[in-house]
Image (cartoon, rainbow, N blue to C red; front, side, top):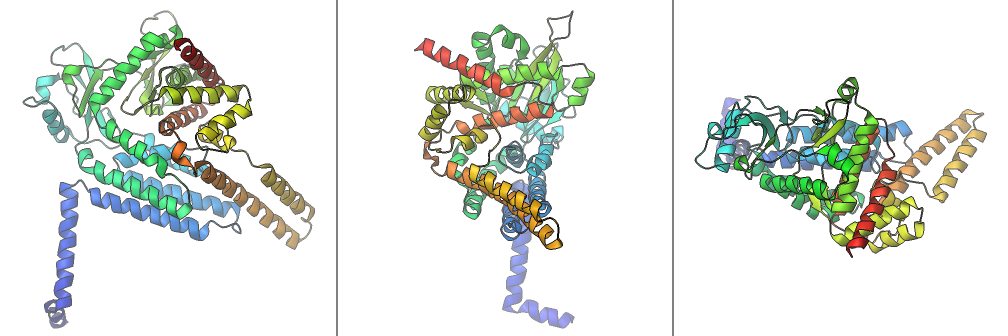
Length: 499
């Protein structure tokens, strides 16, 4: 047997096999140690999308039962979650973006992927020290900070946060946000994977989503520039001070930036104590009112969308703290603290006006005006557009509704025999399948002519979906749509005055 193996290895095929195996191992080790596993992560993403696509193509069929169809969604969501967790980095953000699309995607996607809002793994201080040192040439951590925490107090997809005190002002406690060292090595491959996977999904399921990819790539690259994030933060502070009403100015706080310790990969802001929205039970134990919290939150982001045009693109629960107002020592008064200003969208005045008009028309039930605005963006189905922008849940067409009722009536009338019971089951299956297929068909039709869709819509819609999810997680204590409509009217009024 040993002699046979030697003869094989001496042959041409054997030498090629050994060379291929050696190259594969060397390539894997190079990718892992020098490229932060960028290639392996990309291949994992491609494989995951391929497996999910094959599962849907083979198994999502009308003759299957409701439970089986839901199991296809469950498998897809679990596979996607595993891929995002294993890959980390920007893939965490990709998964978070999918998790908030509750109006358009089946419930398992939100249920499974919402865990991505939990803390991501952090890296030891010796690994982030070079990031700080290259941001401030000739300086070490101890030259900038004292009492730099040995463990991260928070860790997200692309960065982690440590507490410290400024060397220049040891009484000032600060939050030091440091970009993880592997991110710069991974971003090119990650965005390539995003673009390719989006193309594969578009081809496999005929869902036009490529129109949004360019805007997503641009914003994610900007998010890795912490100096830009610092400017976003200061702009949001000025907007609140100059344009916000007294309730907003008092109810929301944005931490100050310390520029002497801020660079492209390091951001230093004042440290603010508070309870994260990730912990609703703790908020309840502290006696905070969900209604007061959500009133401030919805008002803040409606103010940004319709009044200032500078919109926070990632208001998930981990980016919002609740604290006692520091100027009120006599009564309980919640104040929201808004964190993580890396992902912002700047609305054009034309978009802001049209979007405000759409929401005002929705409040007035002016369907003609809603349809006119949606059609100006290339979307003939104003109802589906309302679903996409987080205004209302999808509605079945009257034809599909009648078909479903007919199937249910027929099934009820035939429920006396086993054959009739089987017919009822088929009708139920068909009805469930048809509802999901109609929702897909309407989404595809709505996005078919995507050339007219404003690029701002991607992250404004993301903001609204996350805020809606926050409101739902706290029991829907406020009428979010009503508040948005009020700020839409306020924004229009201010624009008319300016003109």
